[in-house]
Image (cartoon, rainbow, N blue to C red; front, side, top):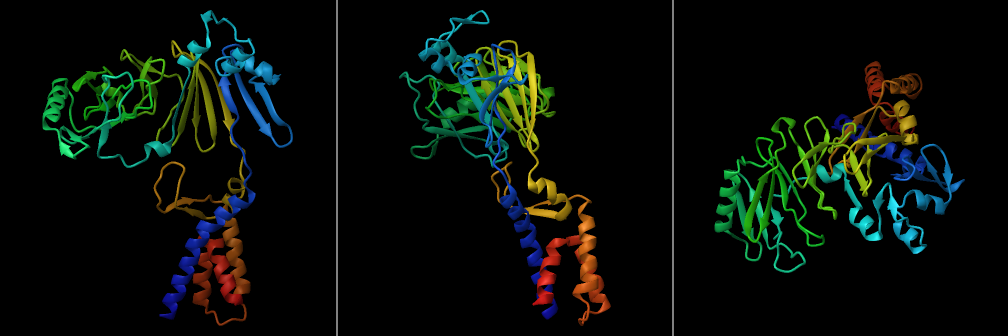
Amino acid sequence: MKKFSKIFFYLTAVVLLSWLLPWLLQFAASKPGNDPFTLYSCVTKRFAYIQSSKDNGVKRYDANGTEYTVAQFDSILPTFYYRQLFSKDRLPDTINGKEVTPKIIAHGNFTFKQSARDVNVTKPALNMIMESMPDRIDLENPIEAFRTTDRITFIDMRDNTVNEKKSALFDKVMKQKGFEFPVRTLSGNPTNRKEYDEGYLMVDNNHRVFHVKQTKGLPYVRETGVAPELGIEHVAITEFSNRKTLGLLTDKDNNLYVLNRDYTLHKLPIDKYDPKTNTLTIMGDIFYWTLKISDEKGVTTYAVDADSYAFADSLRYDYPETALDKWSKYIFPFELSFTSYDDQWVKPRVSMGSCWVLILNFVLAALLYFTACKGSTCSRRQKFITTVATMILGIYLFIPLLVCKRA
């Protein structure tokens, strides 16, 4: 029983230290730092970014390293700072041959963000659905929800009853259009805090993409014509103010596409984007889209033409190496955590260290073998087990062994 208690104690100590030590190192040595705010300039045809530091304060540059004053920076990003320019009577009448006014710019501007935490979630069994053409001008809060199994079923949320008539009607129309249940994935935005409603983008069991919404209580179902061979796995409905696009799609190979309202599909000229691990941010205007794809090591920023979706430029920013990144590969054989930036689940996660940690592990094991057990009642068998275990578990076992030996 005593031997079992010791084993349990040391295992508990290893688990706690593998969780706390990396966190303490990161907490003690971390420095605040973010990637620079970056946009593509429709004036200079280069990226422009704001860099802030403790020593130099806030500085404004373009990709060539040219520094700008605040007023100059406003002028090279007229679609972002248009209110400031308009208030000072500095907003041009035309840019790149296009007429610009505050209304035109505001109508064309949009922001879209999707993180891995938004994707890696448990999908709800029920999805609310709105009336896309209400009697009044403003959209109304949804009063119905639907679930999908081998068919679609509508539930009236006011009394929690199934609307059999509407369920049968939608199910019939969807199947007539070639929809094959069950639904692989879907995306909608059922809120009245928007200008208009486009319902849902749904991917059926055969990887075909459908546009489904409720219009005057009746089903609106259209197959978008996206090739099933692409293997669309993720969809995100957009509903931007300019009403040009319908959604963003990613396929099995992590290519990113934009689906226009006329159901034309355009592959965006960027590297791979994995919604399960990357964060996508898009800031668009009437001239260019600035797309930022964030991963663990940094941010890649792309600029594409807002009309043709042609590639314009790209820029890479790597995060500075943190103390944890720098030293963990030499100190920690593995790291235990319970949360992640990639999802919202709390569960044990183990990330293995590098082979460099074996150097420290062997040193610690040798110290224990030649000093900690010296002059004690440790048998050769105990020394051997302790040494081998320290070679594997490293500092996580060395600390509790050393503390207990000295206690």
